[in-house]
Amino acid sequence: MTLTKRALLAAASAGALVCASSAALAQSAMDNIQKTKLIKIAVPTDFPPYGFVGIDLKPQGLDVDMANYIAAKMGVKIELVPVTSANRIPYLQTKKADLVISTLGKNAEREKVIDFTAAYSPFFQAIYGAKTLSVKSMADLAGKTVAVTRGAIEDQELTKVAPAGADLKRFEDNNATVSAFVSGQTQLLATGASVAGVMMQRNPQLNAEYKLLLKDSPNFIGVAKGEDALRTRVNAIIAEGKKAGDIDKMAQKWLGRPAGQLPD
Image (tube, rainbow, N blue to C red; front, side, top):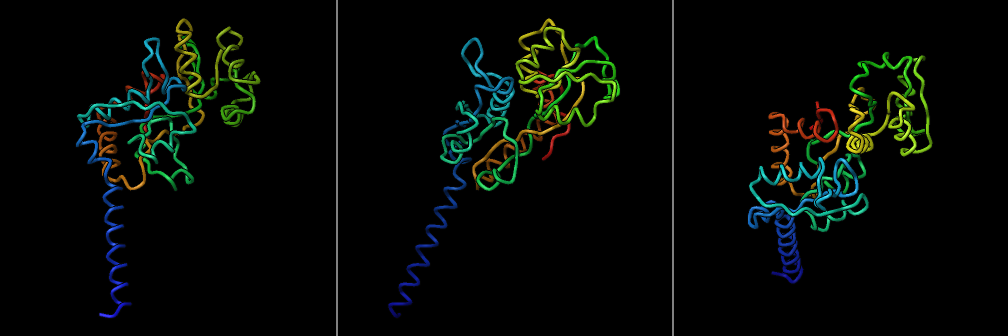
């Protein structure tokens, strides 16, 4: 065998070993979870009602409930890893977390660096009001006052569909918008699910509820690239949760409405 052929053969063998090692590493998360009986899931702790620290100083919220649900269905213990919007994807890429459940929307840029499961919860802009106020369609907004933050997504969407007789009261930030509704300056509030969730928790005396949807942007669970076994298992758990009504119950508990139809 010539030196050139030997060199080529050695290089090919080395390349095959690297590829095999990479494949083994890429599929290691599920094996490691099963071996250690522990799953590390990144969750938010500063974004109620999806994830926040309760008075007992423990994380709670929809995303935290979903993380605990997955761990329970897998039959393993859970380690909740607090993350922010800025570091949640890097935590997944550097294996500080096996999954990220932190109000992640799916888009083309993120799909270049991580994979996603099926959607597990809604994230939306909607109209809220007292349970005693009958609002079943956009036409019912006629003659009613609605607080909304100027220029926000909900303002843009509401402007498209509000009837001519609706009185839209625009405020400069979310705090002012919520305050206007809480103080009774307006009958209705148009805002995002997270803002509304906090408002309803802090002001139960208002008996506010979800009324009408303006825009839906569902949340997905982040999985590291190549972790197909883990992604498949989590998708099965989500599908089971949807069928059993558990996903709807979590959304109802924290967002005031069922999850409804979520994309796979």
